[in-house]
Every structure is written in C-alpha cells, then in structure tokens.
Image (tube, rainbow, N blue to C red):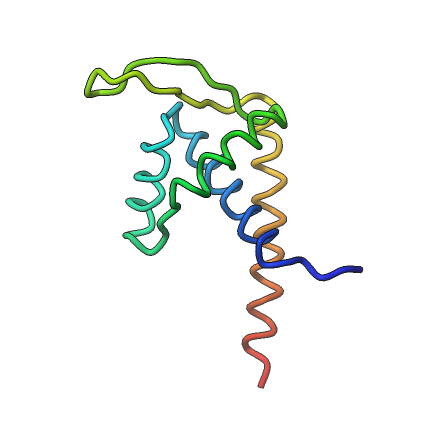
Length: 111
C-alpha cells in the first residue's frame, strides 16, 4: 500500500471542511473560508488558492452544486450547496477522519 502524500491528506481535509461548512447552509467561496477560520478560532485558514480548486473538484464530483447569487454587499458571487451525494460523503468522510485521527493519537501517545 502506497503511503498517503501530504497533499492528499491536505486535499481530503479541505474537502471535508468544505462539506461540513456547507452542511450548515449554502455559502459563497469567501464565506466558506471565513467560516472555517471563525469556527476554529483562527487556527485554520484555507487560502483561496486551495479553496477554489477544492470547490471545483467537489462540484465536478457531484458532491456540491452552485448557482449565482448576490452577497450581503450586493456583489455577484457563486453560492455552493451540498447535494444528496455530498451529505452522504460528509458522513463517510467524517467517520474516516475520526478513525485516522484516533490512529495518529495512538501513535503519538506511544513512548
């Protein structure tokens, strides 16, 4: 089995964070990044160079969909929302992440 590369872990993490954020409500890209930063108390910042490719990848995969709308500031923006497949994937990916994190924690506690 080939080891998971750091970029694969990062990509999966961003995808999971985006799916979880969109489970709350449809949002535009900038709002998604702001929400993640807000919820984590500034510990996680998703840069736009990673966020927008993740949004495109998730939309291409059928996990999210988008439509144009207006922001609170009356600016035109693409709003993203979860699809039924995205909700299912969120549940699966959340469980997978928890198993991964628990396994890492076991290793870190080993003396």
